[in-house]
Length: 225
Image: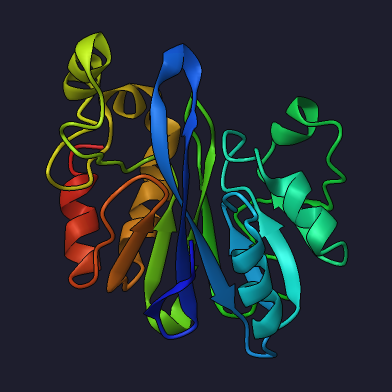
């Protein structure tokens, strides 16, 4: 699970699949984002395999561990033990779910002052409010669960049917039907602000990365919302 360069100041690592409700397994991906001082933000961390931890430790100090929503929290504690100086940040809701984690800050529409190269936008929804993050130097937008696409043969049996009906296994990253239903009127203005960002690239936790034409892709993916 080595790091892969994705864009200037952005690296990704694939994790082992995790199992969620009703036995649905998901492939997972994390991103490592570099700040001007060389410190690092770890977005949606995957399993801290020794090689991955060593690679990241050699790159610079880890400043923050970021859970983009209250669903992506499984490995925060493990990474905090490797990098105890890092802060742990998440949107509202995770503190109640994980009282064992020493959360340092609740993420809102305003990025922490020590994230000078980031823009953020909290997108409310009834499943899990999600922080969408934009890495300005590389024009990379990071979205966690609001966009997904898994291989068509990832699931079998009834799960395969449910995933197809939910649009989880489209050929291009798509807003699953459950999230389309969960995104109400309160999400319209936040999504418009996200679509205004000049994104060239788009990274997802469960989907095929978009390496060019990111802004057009996002407008098409979120059309009608």
